[in-house]
Length: 289
Image 1 (tube, rainbow, N blue to C red):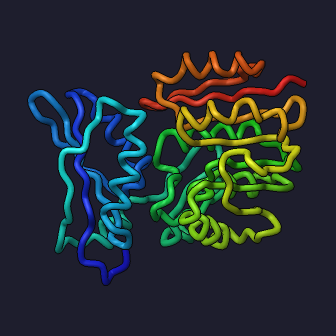
Image 2: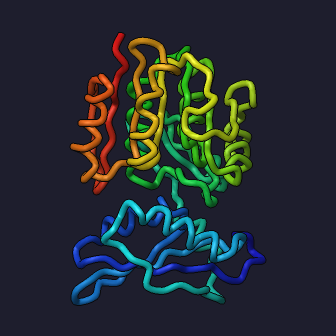
């Protein structure tokens, strides 16, 4: 939000009492840049706030698309909020965030305050998913830090803000390809690449529907999206990856763990590592050598 904007949209979600953490996690998945939780006697509500540079219908569709995987959560209210110092509150909501052994995510206004010894990832928190504050993104970044080796070729599917592609390039990947189905986020990815002094030669950014049209082979693939599209692309992984390549999957809820493990086994993929943060789960799998 720019200083001239005087309001935000909000959408209120409701679910059963005790699921506060899940609603907080859903806020960033939906593209929200802030949320307030209200505990009621039999339920819990979360008011999600969205930038006013897009209309409310855009955000409502985005929320409803995400909620298809969360049947226990419903939309109960929506509207606009006026006359609050949103610009300052928004910036204060994104302090520098250390992740893993040596990464730190920073909004551009925190440039110059990087912790010593950590690799900075500059991400402007706009509408694209992946500011680094969501548990699933943190899982993916920690996986990437452990499994990426310098000189690897990397594909990032459903790149969102581009944070994983940017991290891969800054960790030493030789070639990074970033693809997203939503053409609206491509501009944001390129802006974030510029913030990190990365050129188009270092990160190839473009539209793409999962692995369709993607040309490999790649040594490593990252995908921080949702259960259904992750399962959908499993049969095509062998086409774009080298034998023995690893895949870093995130964006999965804890309830997805067993069905996704079964889907991996059905494609002959072996499990290398699993990780849980809050209500979210991720896994590293490997193509047969």
